[in-house]
Length: 472
Ligand code: ADP
Ligand code: G6P
Image 1 (tube, helix red, strand yellow):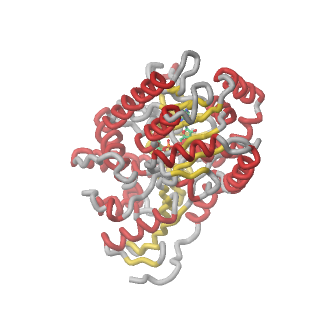
Image 2 (spheres, rainbow, N blue to C red):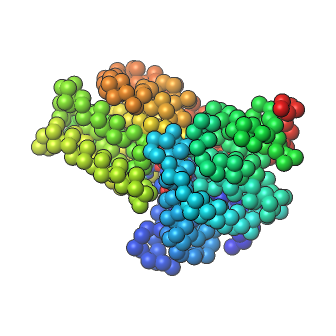
Image 3 (spheres, rainbow, N blue to C red):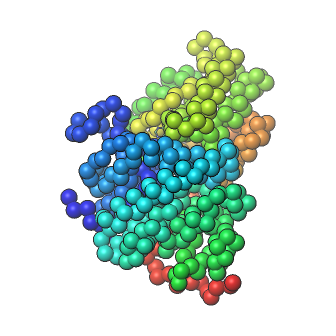
């Protein structure tokens, strides 16, 4: 297999990771790795026959490049120490909470920062080895913000794009970061820096001006004799894949089976990684109170909450899991009856078929993050509801709220508001459901993940001529 490629994606994660306990070598089993980044980039990669440079999810294991599902994968190893300090540490205990409005306190540790620099170097070198002359290299997400500048130093011939899948914080928050200058300089190694929303691109340009004294014009930053463009590209879902899934008789039968198993009841559904940004506890609190207040009775409605295990060794995630499991136990103990639990909670990852069946079975999709770059689950639900049935309750703090204006939008911090909105969504007439769903579907179908990737990559391929002379 020739690894040299004209199109290279660099992300912390490969699209598959090893199923723990299935051994190494030929006998090992692989599964799709979690999260929105992989859901979005995998279909694009399959179509472009590129090379994906990333980690395969197991510590202390060096693997040779391999091929899966039409994608060439180049594993980048991480030692146990790297996993602890770079992945669980600086990426997920520092950057993740800081960039999500400090909904949990970020940890600032010099040891973690050193690991972040070291592992970013390793990714940059791996990408430099596989990119052919003049190749396009697309670096993904907050774990690899130093890679663009490192890669440019190694390979000035490359065209480098960067996309941040999570929010980019306002100046007042980013200012906390002890290594704020290094991170901005790392990102400025790219030709194009993409964000989910225009506000995030503006935050970035404003920071470059204030912190680096960089000259700028609108969303162009003049840096190192180059122009770096900052732009918004709201990410989306693979509508074609979801259409295929919902057309399968097995998926439709499974949706019916789920409805039958749950009894003649209204089904609310939550699908998230088990993450404190997702507002799962607020959702449970509001739903539980609807029973306490007498607005709902056991058997009338049920919440199915699927929570994929995520970052399980990070303390905040362990605390959250305990909190959610206690809450579910309390709500079922207090309001459930024999044969009628109020919440069905599953701490597991599902196949795409099973997820599609759940989307088809759900009457109300509940997406209540406290902050989210985009939230693909909301868009997946809309893409699956070709029958124009079902309602979407969506947090104002999800990036998707900017596009899905006809969702039942809600502030998840406002528990009374959340309860009222859940009731409205539960009681929506079919004609109202269809009106809202039609409008949301139009947006998602016209702006699917292919269009997102095309927009980003064609913008990256354009020469970087500035929109005007520097203003400062
Ligand atoms: P994040 O990227 O923060 O995890 P998103 O909502 O943007 O959040 O993306 C989550 C992706 O992971 C979606 O494509 C969703 O279908 C998938 N996913 C979420 N929960 C599960 C689960 N329990 N099993 C399988 N896939 C899941
Ligand atoms: C979000 C992030 C991704 C990350 C995913 C899963 O989607 O934006 O970069 O890969 O969550 O998280 P994990 O830590 O398991 O890779």
